[in-house]
Length: 390
Image (cartoon, rainbow, N blue to C red; front, side):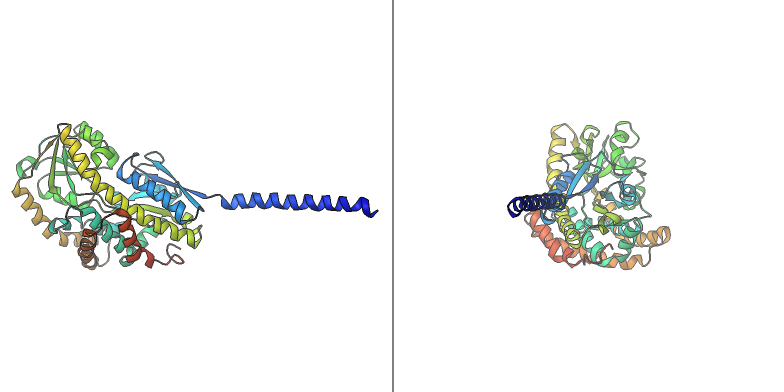
């Protein structure tokens, strides 16, 4: 009996062990499979923003130790105007949200975004956008609980910011002085450029970035107030004949470039949330850095294509500087009356020193990865992932 039962018991035991190993392998494979997050970005491939998104994808994979992956949908899942609602409603897990497109919903961040023309009054060394995005990153994370409340109301968690290079006039005709700009229709993306347009006798027209090409080619607008890298990013190089770089200035800094759906965020563990925050510092730094690189490249391409690059009349430049000086009071009054922002002057007084602080820091930075590390140590590492966005 013993000799016949022993081999059978051993065989059964071996089968049990094999089954256990196989099951463990299945579960281990499931555990090892990264959770994929969808990221909607309303720019085409090979633009400053999407190149930075590629860096983000790699950093999320690396910093989450393979537990998270990100799939980027450039100009496919949602366009720029659709993205805020798409993140809110869970159509995408992560979205490139231009908060200025929703002035009431993100009023507190947009107030800070409207301060960008203060850069006209500073020595920026050509790093306007890097300075502004750095100040905005610190402001939203550490100094603006009302910004966070706005995000929460839209079912979103802020994790990264970026800013364009200097905004200029990209036109389908020559516009360089007060006489030429009077009566022109200028595409604007936020309230500060609307007010500037009206102050020089032009008409401001609001529209998403994805609609500018058609508006310029069909003559619906005479100029777009936008940065030079969008000559390639939005294909405006085929719609523009004249560029005036000196005016109006400022940058587009109301950009929450990796807003995450609250339900997605709360479904992650603390290590994964920390990984997304740190990966966001790299995306911010690389997006701003690429914009600087692309400005020089795209202006050269425009000139080679025969697009005329003009110098603005000094009187128009002086008029713009005077506008900026007086606009701070207007901004405070506008956001209080229009959107009910509490203590807008206090917000302005908090933000302005951050611009000065980051102008000094950014001036010395040599690489985008160095800037990302500074973002982490100076700002983002101070965010408590146990409570943030929860």
